[in-house]
Amino acid sequence: MLTISQLAATAGVTVRTVRHYHHVGLLPEPERDASGYRRYGAQAAVDLIRIRTLADAGVPLARIDAMLHAQPAEFAAAVTDLDAALQRKIDQLTAYRRRIAELAGGERLVLPPEVVALLDRMRGLGIGELRVRVERDAWILMQALEPHAVPQRIREKNAGFDDPETTRLYLACDRSVDWDPHDPRLDRLIDELDTWEIAHERDGSRAGYRKLVSSRISDASPAWQRIVDALAHRAERRRTAGHDS
Image (cartoon, rainbow, N blue to C red):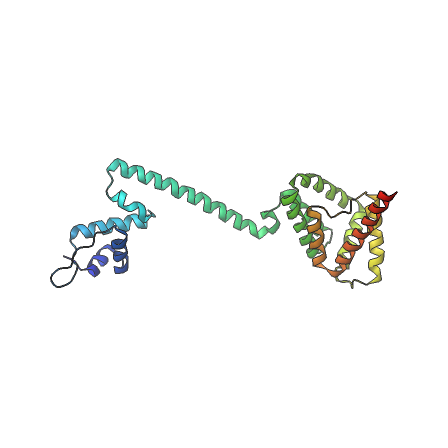
């Protein structure tokens, strides 16, 4: 007969584990003998080894008791079911690993390849990383709130970077990131940008995701905040004048 310590050593588990198996009903707990000790026979050692083996194989404790008492066909079916569950878990973890690996690419985690290529094009033109991050966030917002608009906007953006004047204004805005909001150079830049807006018939309203994008740009730089506010104000004046005429 074995003490609980000897039983645990036989199966390669701790005494605490044996007591836990008693608690959850997996292993019967014998009565104490005349000396006050619980004594375990060979069957308890065999059962504990089987329990440990199943647990080590990943079988949930809630299913072990049924498997211990299953007929061979039932046991085989349970093993097949457990294997399928483990494969699903492996597939899920593999997908998680793939997404974590994509984190290294940043934009590639949440944006389509065409947008990532556009952001890389901006970097190639010499546009600073802060402006690229703002652009990235704008695409994330658009994809979440107006996904139907993404393909057309990609085409428009690429066409814009094909235009030297549009590229020049992008670079000029990028250089203004650290300017004082009252720098007179901003006045000239705002005039140029407003002229560009009018020439390209851009709607200066801040509906939908554009409000969030404008807020993101403003948060990035006080100078950019002044540009955004000034252009929005001028666009609003034009709309009001158009309604009054």
